Amino acid sequence: MFGFAAWREWNSGVTDLVDRLRDDVLRREPALVLSYAGRRWALTRGESVSIGRASHCTIQLPDDDHISRCALSLRVLDDCVLIQNSSASKPAVLRPPVGEDRVLEPGAGTTSMPFRIFRIVVAGRGGVAIGVEADASALTPDLSVPDETTRSCPTVTSPITFTAAQRRILVELCRPLLTRSGAAVRPADYEEIGQRLGLKPFHVRNVIKKLREELTGHGVPGLTDTEVAAARDGFRWPLARWLVRNGLVSSDDIGGQLPVAPVEDMNLADDLRGHERHDD
Image 1 (cartoon, rainbow, N blue to C red):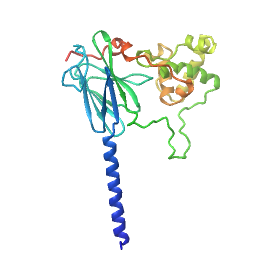
Image 2: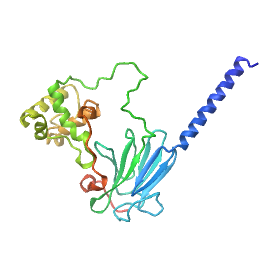
Image 3: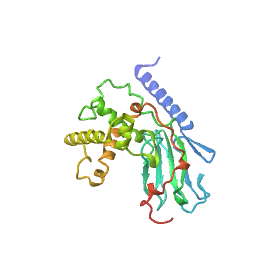
Image 4: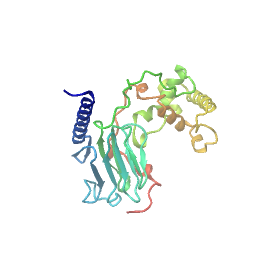
C-alpha cells in the first residue's frame, strides 16, 4: 500500500511524464508552413530556415543582385516566428493580410505576433516584390477569440464616447487600413468618406477635426498642431492608427474584408526607399 507522500510523489512523476510527452508531440507536429514558387516547407517548433539568393539558403530566391545572398532567417518559437533580417544593407517587410507593413531594417529582428498568416517580402531589382507566404495558424493563438478565463469588465480604451454618426465617419476613415495591405494601406480622405456616407467632404473634415481636438484634450498623443508632418493630411494617419491599434475600429465594423492583392503585383521601390545603405 502506498502512503500519501509516496502516492503524491508518484502522481507528480506521472504528471511530469505526461507533460514531457505532450511537449514532445507538439515539437514534432508542423507548426509553420512556408510557401514559395510552388514549393512548401513544414517546420516544427525549434527549427530554422534561411532565405536568400545564395544556393545554400533553405529557400532560394531569384538570382537578382538586388536581393541579399542571405536575406533573412526564420526560427519557429513556441507560439510565434522569430524573423531576423540577415542582410547588411537591404530592408525587408513583414506584410500581414491587411494593415500596415512592418519594416525590418538591416540587422533587425521581430516576431510574427500577432499575425497567424503573413508574408515575408524583399524588393528585387526595379522594386519588384518577392514574397514568401507563411502560415503560422497552428502555432500562434487567435487573439480575436475572447479569453474566457476572466470575468472582469472589458478594458476601456477610449477617453470619449462617439456618437453613431461620428463612429460611421471614423469607420470609413479606417476602412483602407483594415481591408488593404502593403503600399495601398492609408486612411481614407474626406472625399472618399463623404462619397460612402452621402456627406459633404467639408462636413466630414469638420467632424474629424472636432474629434481630434477632443481626443487631444484627453491626452491622446500625436494629434496636435506641433506635429508638422501629421498636420499635412489633417492628422488622419495618427488618428486612424490610434483607432485601429486601440481596437476602437476593427474588421468587425467593416463587415467583411476585401481580397488582398498578390504580393508579386506590389512594387516596393517607394515603400523601402531610404532604408538601403550599400550592396552586400
